[in-house]
Image 1 (cartoon, rainbow, N blue to C red):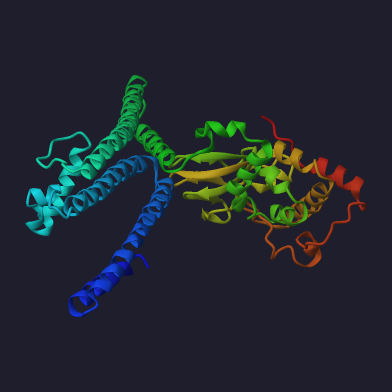
Image 2 (image 1 turned 180 degrees about the horizontal axis):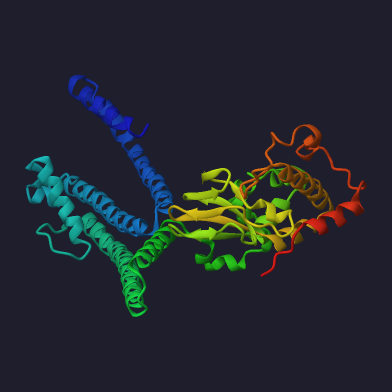
Amino acid sequence: MIVSLDWVFYAIRQEENNSAGASRLGKTLRGLKFLRIMRLLKTAKMMTKLEHIEDTLASDVSHHFSVAKMLSLVLVWCHLVACVWYGLGTGMHDGSGWAQRDAVVSWEFFRRYSTSFHWAITQLGVGGSAHVPTTAGELVFANFVLMFSILVFSSVISSVTNSVAAMHERASEQNRQFRLFRKFCRDNEIPPSLSRRMKKFLQHSLDSTTQKVHQDQIAMFEHLSEPLLAEIKENMYGPCLRANTFVLKLKYTVPGMVRKIAFKAVREVKMSSHDVMFNRGELALGALIMSKGLLEYEHPQIGHIAVEETTWIAEACLWVKSWMHSGNLKAQEVSELLGVEVDPFIETIRTHVQAWDIAHKYAKYFCKSIAADENASDLFELSRRRTKGGEESLLSHDAVDLESERVSCIKWLFSRIRRATP
């Protein structure tokens, strides 16, 4: 509708020139001109879209975008002022307007627009213009623009200065930290290969901090309630957690349990390129979940395996007492994982009798399955395909019989689940 107004005005003007009803059509044209005010609605929508775009950008890019946005708003403001200023200069019937007096109306379009735009820019306090207001309307408008420009220009200068200062401060602090890092490597005779790995990991961590906002960076989060923080953790870690058969079962049978596990038992783990997470024969202290990056698992029987995203690693330590790693896990590039700690995991499950009962059934079948697998590794997991048949009830959404085997469940689980030692 807004775009079609220009075509309507053009058609009416043509009709005015070619028909006898020029007077009537002229009134219609003047009546429709007020609809052009609706164009201002596009500015409000544009501001909302710009804010949404700025929120999705990384912090460094966001600062540049903020500066560009403020400069664009200044240009829009100057354009509107220039249009109104030229309209006032050509709207006097006695020819006393500034554009009529200075013969600006006889110039070509680009020169007329540039003259009006230049006057609008000078109202921000930079430069001067040879065209001055003379009529009462022009004086009132000029005074209004001057007063408003003081607020606009001061806000723009403040915003641009703060954004540029923030960018310089961040870059200066990073340069200072890397100078200290290089001095540390020299003073302590750190091998060049290790220092390069350290620098690459530090650079990746800094880049991820600017591209992705972490919870620790938002000081206001400390005022959130525990249920809200738990819900945030569930949304962050839920996809990786629910890749596990047991957690997927809890999602459908025990509402809120996955949220508690994500809040109390899960932590973030980062690995640099060529870092070794564990070696064969080491005691497993917790389960891991591949989140992002590239990991390689080496096992004597199954060889080298590239670990896929959402894969659980060493899940057995949650169900088997004193699980020893049966292979080596090494990062091929900077990687991100989730760590599931044993004690918080067990304590969280113990808070709900139904979750405890499901854990008993799952642990019992897990131990039986891993004992029957000759090539059992740290990547062993129970899939929904493997739990069909005799253990199909493990993944069904039917209610679990909490009364049967309650005492034996608790005794067996206590005897099989290993307590993590710090």
